[in-house]
Image 1 (cartoon, one colour):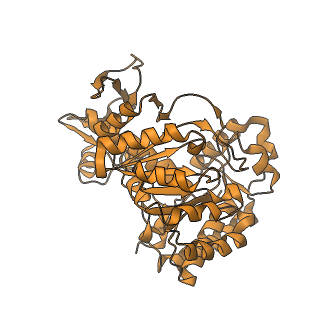
Image 2: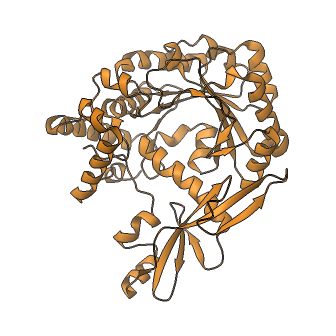
Image 3: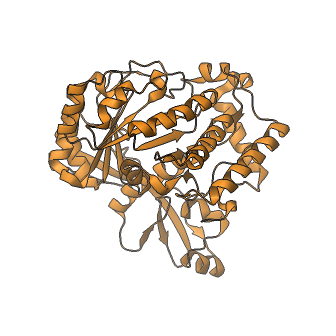
Length: 417
């Protein structure tokens, strides 16, 4: 097991904290003053609580992805694809019939299916994209994918037909529109895993039970809602008894779309790359512990915001970078292109686009359907001069601190401030 010190990221330089605080303030403007951020006493108590939880979990749970995800001993197949950087998420629609107070995005988009800024109006084109980029997992999300069942089924079928068993297929749903017949159709289209947001139905397992004997893997994926912690623990027992295979808990984060409902609930907010809910993380960690203490057959995975922010973004960068990497270049852990010269180093980022910006060099790639996409190479730094010692350390895999963000994914959960 990794040492406890790896599980929390700290910022010894207070200027970094201050920059993040200022960024959070800018994002919300005057509304920022309506938020309750943790003061010194609350931070001290929360840090003590988290330290005790992590010490307990350190001996019993599997920490993975540089300490940003746990328990990793029983991840679903889809989560394994994500952790390995092989996941493509297609938002098949942008409308939802739910009214979840914690939803981080607007549900009013009538646009075409989209993934990573790329629109795919044809199921066959999307399947060709999945094959060309070498994804090992594909999820269908929304909105609510079952509001457009025929469209959803067409994309599932196309990926399964083109990629065969090499790709793990899963779908996110609140389950309200699921029927026994639709469940069978999803299975027949090649669906391997279905994930239910039970928070949308107050943790009612009725529709979920339709899938248990039909879809190979049944997962519940919900945010850790602090005021529902006791109810969640009760439902964890019921989920295990019902045959649910996995439970994924997310950390709640603040966005312009859920600002009102979250601010009204009296949560304590934390600064960081984005504003998150303090009580949500502690609820998630206690729930992981509860499952282990009770010996439940239901593996519980806490998917922290730092994991999503660092690893999912790195996976997208790395995939594009590997497609344009040439002799003499290295793709770093966070997915940047590093070029060493006799005197220094420079870094670039690759991006996969529908259309090139024409501001930077780009390459055209053509899918087997004839659809063109563009890989653009964007400079991030000028050439940075390296001392002999810095170059030696970099080549040995120990980059100097000033280059660390280009070379290493940050480890640990977010510091509380």
